[in-house]
Image 1: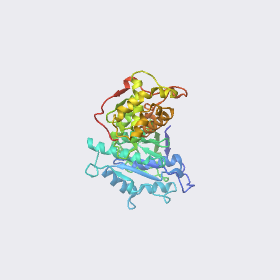
Image 2 (image 1 turned 90 degrees about the horizontal axis):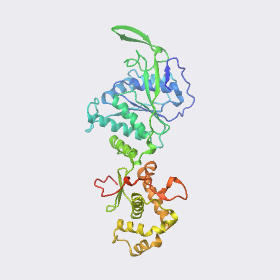
Image 3 (image 1 turned 135 degrees about the horizontal axis):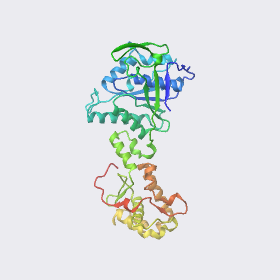
Image 4 (image 1 turned 45 degrees about the vertical axis):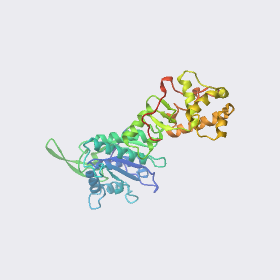
Length: 397
């Protein structure tokens, strides 16, 4: 439900110097008012003790200049300090520092004056994704993201990035301001002592009191995908477009490709190597699924030692370079028992979890049918989702 706030909302008295370490993230164009409007709405809703301790803003070159002049410059209006002073917390902390004004830059490092081209859009998307990824680290405090400012694409990118990276404690909102205060160049928030503003409507000039302003903080529901996506998505070097591609692959129907010659597997488009024993076990089980031969009970593993050894031989080659003792041990059927199966399966499943994330890896893990004990071990894949082929376009390992 949206929270509507106005000048009559009583100011809260700060009771704790150690407020929650929440961060406010805004995208901003040429209207720094959205920063103070969002901050006013948050403090009015939650109280000064939960005021964001840090404000991060993503903007353009001209936007940075406006933020400095209108919100931070002691010789200017200094609207941010005025807002905090109205809630009795101006001396406790400075949530917005110059270093946290993140300027979108072109490929040659120059601040963007606006977002007009495809390259500009990509630069904005990458900076937004990188910033959200950093601010939603496991140890970071709650993140409040406002999509109210900037170009429409900036708000879209921020909302999408929050869907990819947001944790349960993070939130997304949009701030709405009633006319004639919305977009008014002199309105930043409703001060405790009402002020008069000049507005022009239909060619006529009139004066309005700021205590008539209404600020609505509207929560924006998002689909939280973080736990369902591969860990690679959280890598600092992953661009916005790459993150979207990774997310899409994880949502597409699963597909397993095994390249025996290169000892590689591809799971939902992600290519990686596996140790010989693990790849042999995966290939053996995948071949059974492809041929619709069904799963295998743990107690019967030794009955399939010949099949497993066949796949191990294909993976390593007849002359794998192993020591004679290890080669003999491997080729001994007695070495393929329940203990070997448990150990190799555990290592394989752990490797898949680490590479793909547990939610995506569930399609490729060797597990008991329906997750029930005393059931055969199998892969949750249909025959048409399994292929043995050479991987032509391997990704990073």
